[in-house]
Length: 272
Image (cartoon, rainbow, N blue to C red; front, side):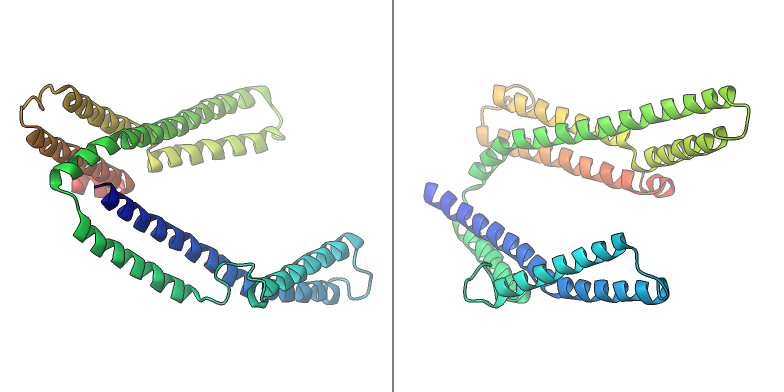
């Protein structure tokens, strides 16, 4: 069993490593093309400013020094990247390898993991027991997401409270149109944006749903750990099967509620 676990873990590590290498290689290739192009555009922009804006006068020193510094930086970055890519020093792990080739390696590694997992898959009871042991991490994630959305909701509410109060206070305090007019416009804009964002993203509802799912999963995890209803059966395998079925149903319900929150109000009513 330990050898099987180690083999599957190693496959996952190899896939994670390849995924990171693909990301790094994409950035490297992007830099190889984008940096010299950016340097050329910077030089052309510098020349364009001189020709179209300061043709009959001297270009201001801040513009010259800023443009010169950016050009030097981009040229140095281009030289460094080309040296890392085409020199024999092997400064990059995958220099000379295309992103397409790395993605092919990643696909082959994933296919190999799937075939190996089919060959080494442990019995159902062991997988269900492992599933139960992974739930504390899932519960912690749900609670963390719930706290995140709760904080966003509280921040939005405080902004609404303060901005709404400030609108009344500024209106009562200032008689002349300025600067009260500008302040009122800014505060009214803030209230409108925050109200629209709160209605669209619904952080309060998201926090409530996540917290409710986390509490339900934790309740079932405690029940199976203590051997109480609905997992008081003497057959441990039957308890695990019932437990995993229930938890997956709770997670599916949570995903459905998230999808409903992501839909417009009319779409939510149609789903419901």
